Length: 288
Length: 277
Image (cartoon, rainbow over all chains, first blue to last red; front, side, top):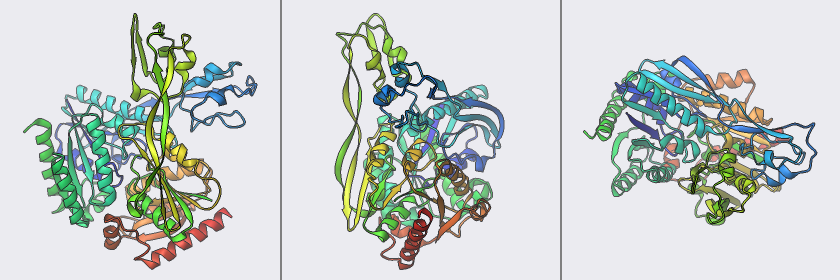
């Protein structure tokens, strides 16, 4: 079984649009939406949920005010500044490390696993899908990403599918690391802008750090062809294949409004470009 | 006054709004909290390192270690594994340095060593002071860097904070201590879906908010209808424009070339002042 993750560094470059299009071309894939704090893939794939599970990924400190003597030991030792001047625990900052629990002389603090999201197993018109919802303002999305990937691999084994296609989160931090580590290939969707280039270089750094091979798609390349060229030159120097160049086209937005992938929308420009990119990606994945 | 520019969905124009709003106001501090992918400086200019951000992670003195497993049993992140008689493994990438292992160790076998997770940079551009944070490649923990950036707001003058995308802990941390949130969205199903999540986060934080619709004219009217139903003020509509896309792509700010936009952003600020009071 192979895992392919679509990343971008910068948000809004077209990751989800392109992942959904790949989903409609892959004959044999399980789809996984690992952008758990702003998941959008379901808006194009319309999954029918078959199973739900609770995500209790992180512990959080709970104080019993009746026992608290306000001695301040917890506040002094908490590295996350999660205990305020009234010795109340700020949920949004608590990382569930447990230090307050062990330093409290009054046994006023204990840790509890908190319900912070839901994971789903679903069916779509392109195959099974693993996705999740992190409740807003929650922490530990890396752990929920790990759960989505685990569910996806389980689905692939159960339904005898050979590929897990992952829609990744933006950025380079915890959820991205949880999405990329141990995958077989990452496809980075970028755009020819100063931010696109800057963020591409950083996310390629992450891929290299975790020893995952990289392929690049330059989306909306015609917005700044000169910039696109400098990015292609950089990729060439770094031995990174550029497997797709997609023009700016309103068809992507039109398809999204209709809840379709760009392959289904089947315009003359984007659909052929994404088909071509998918063929090359398959080549890289399976060494053809 | 602290204004946070956030969005939920990435790539809707947070950085464009933050940078151009700061330039129009002048005499203010712009803080780029998207430490995973900081972009504000690309539109302003050269930055200098202001401070390194360091966390203290455990350092194990194996001569003193008795392999009793107290530390491994304590660690809530499973970052330490002890296999008696004499093997101890430390998984750095799982460690959220909390200091707990050193507290529970009864043999003084755990000290601390510094681990640099990123840096904070500073630049001066006319009246605008920009700070940003850069998370080191391969480091998972963004929030400690954001916490440092948050502490820069000394309550004196106007602070504009450019938030990371999403709706989880890094965004919540950026919203701490804010007076107002500007949510930048685009009029598409993705934009609307993520806007709803962002509104949820901002309302939970108890902050007043307004929406800027970027790339107005593409997509559908879902965002407009949502804002009307929820009684959310639309502060500004920035039209879909090839000129804006091209200026942005080369790293140019918009307000020098677009006096109308400059006026509109000034009006947005005046409106925010009225709301915050």
